[in-house]
Image (cartoon, rainbow, N blue to C red; front, side, top):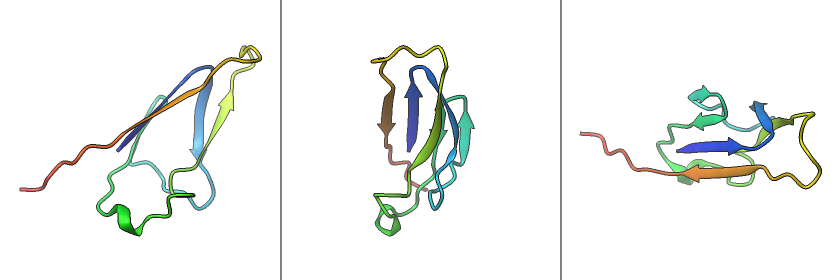
Length: 73
């Protein structure tokens, strides 16, 4: 699963009690999830971002989530 954050902000850290991404490249977070059934959907993927001081009121921050199944052989 990957989360891509775009806009006038930067990823800072996972929120308290949330999962730590397996990979962080800029504002792209990647998680390796073996079983979504054991996760807490209201807290597992919470994170902290810092909004840039150059952001204009009304600017948008976009969060895109992609989930793919990579079967094991």
